[in-house]
Length: 245
Image (cartoon, rainbow, N blue to C red):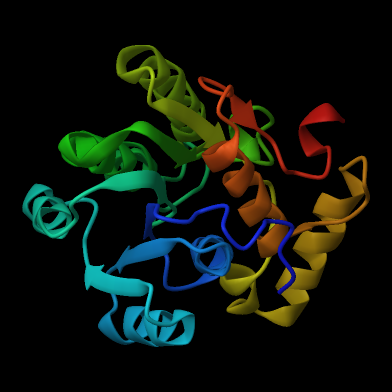
């Protein structure tokens, strides 16, 4: 993976990536380490985190964490002295039409994607450096729903509102959101190839650029928000122009 960053862009800085064992989170971690920084990876699966940290080298460490559990998140941050960058991708939820989903299933998008990130930021407050940057994970569906999944769309919009609210409250700490669309990467690689191809073709046809994004492209958007010292309270859409069609 080629990085556009200098080899010292993250020197003497520590970035926490929850959901950092795979996918976009791991891509962010690779760039940070490659640019001289240290990373703390969080997630729920020991082996995945261990393998990721081993691949990243001496400047990476890991601990398990469940972002839906107060005690688990508190225990995770108890071993983190200072945080210069914070990014959380970990979430697991059920999507579908309002007519089909139970309230409990519909609430999973908020329970994990919204409240999970809220809980992580709240718990990390005492560890955030004065010049820290927090990047929340939203999604293009918040601005342009892709199908009948209203609770999921609403959760993404709520995350973007959270970023704006936190930017006001926590300044000069910067808080932004990144809102990708369909991404060719770890999550989609686990699905049936025919389903994946159909989804990619449909999404590509609805974008200005005519293709899905890569995990590394989303990661570089996150890195920009980590490093750009005048950007706060905004949402970046690395979605190929999906929200503009």
